[in-house]
Length: 150
Picture 1 (cartoon, rainbow, N blue to C red):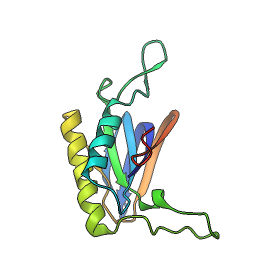
Picture 2: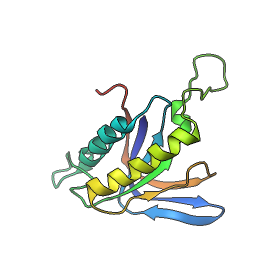
Picture 3: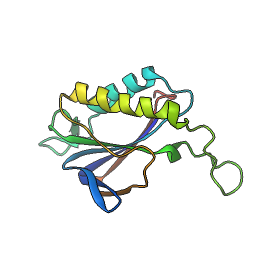
Picture 4: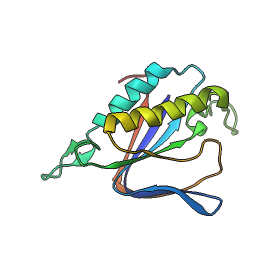
């Protein structure tokens, strides 16, 4: 399971020219699910996201988590995080999980993050064509892969 996390001042998802979800200060989380991912990957990543200290404290140092600042989260499914580009110029997405596996893990991630943060988590719509708008704060962009727990 892969996450691309962006610290944002605001973010929103538009589907069919309608605002589907939006957040203010917090994290925009793009979530890519691989065919070998499990609920263990979800648990590890939720804990990591909730405690990731990428928000500035009073001294300007990155010492605060999204929980510490009472920030919001927006989770958007993105299978393209599992693109393989080694051969040729057209990406392969063969490692991305099929919807029957990915949807339950995507939903579990959102629910688990809500429980951990003790507040609602906004989401995109799995499989939909989405326009994602964001005001990147910093910019701060973090890549996390549950298969390489560094």
